Length: 270
Image (cartoon, rainbow, N blue to C red; front, top):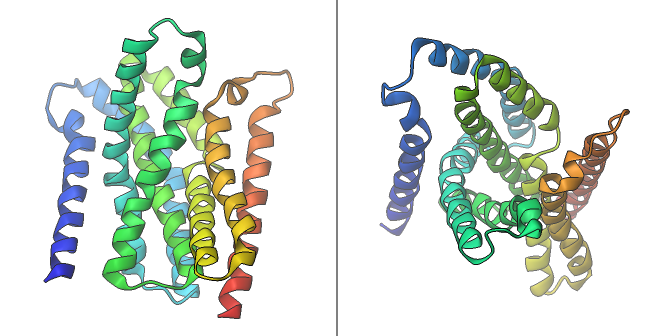
């Protein structure tokens, strides 16, 4: 009965998110040209979303993890973590505006602080649902579930930005989604993977494997830190030769590969 109740709660939260994320395009107030802008932008979004999801399920099969928990984590990251983060970010913004409306610091760093502070914990929620519902315990499987949750969040967030940019016109919306596609090589899927691996290792360290504590905190802070820096003014630095985003991309890919190697070693040792 308890498992059924947890499943119902997951589906209820998921349904809220689905309705929340699609309400603006189902209300019927947009013009035909606006729907066209969204349609073309979504097609561009699918250029990376479809291969990414395919790779996710490919590794799921390769690592002998059922596709169902991966799907739950993917959908949960998009439609549970998404709307929870949206509300949290909105309330945080309103609080900052009430307390320090003209602060240069908060104008520059609000999203850098609010993003990892709210989004990273919320992206873990669907993973915890899946761990309970499907009794997933292998670190390698948990690593993949974290990637799935982060990827789901990333795709839905990209769609939200399409809706947000749409009133500015075709060129603005398309350039916006193209920019997010290029920057999405290292984005939420990396942050969540690092964050979750770090948390897992910290928990294991508290259960006796103390040698994992330092590594766990490293990945935990790395996931949070990458998200912070990516949302900070550093990520907006423009130079003649692009350096800021490529640097963050290289760091993110390097760290997630190191996390994979750590996961691989731990998985083989069990």
